[in-house]
Amino acid sequence: MPKGVMLSHDNYTWMKKSFNTRKIKKLVEFQEQHRLVSYLPLSHVAAQFQDITASMMEAMHIYFAEPTALQGTLIQTLVEVRPTVFFSVPRVWEKISEKMKEMANSGSFIKTKIATWAKSVGPEVLNE
Image 1 (tube, rainbow, N blue to C red):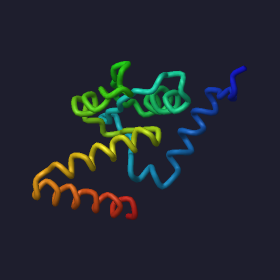
Image 2: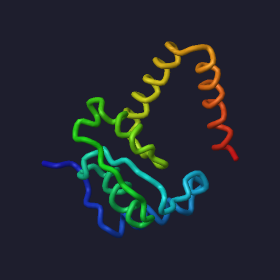
Image 3: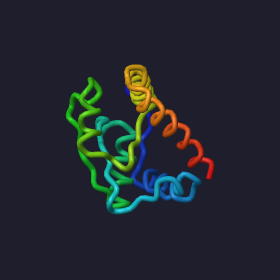
């Protein structure tokens, strides 16, 4: 038997409206020019919320990744699309972090300094 709950259209729209009232809205002001990459199956609750409900309510441009995105082609899609909004499950963020660390260890001194600086600026923006 499936384990889960039924989420109605009202549930999704309420979550989206609630999202707009939180501090995070300051970080990601949704506008028409925003681009979002969809890579999760549309049966996933996160995909239903972000890829369907939020993108329609905010008129975002949505790009669909290849079905093999989670096997390694997601990065190619991200490079091509250059999304301004990227919503992800924790494991994908971990894979991105691992790849960044791997690249940092193989890069030149200048690239390492720039990457270190860029990573230090992120938390400052979050705290504003």
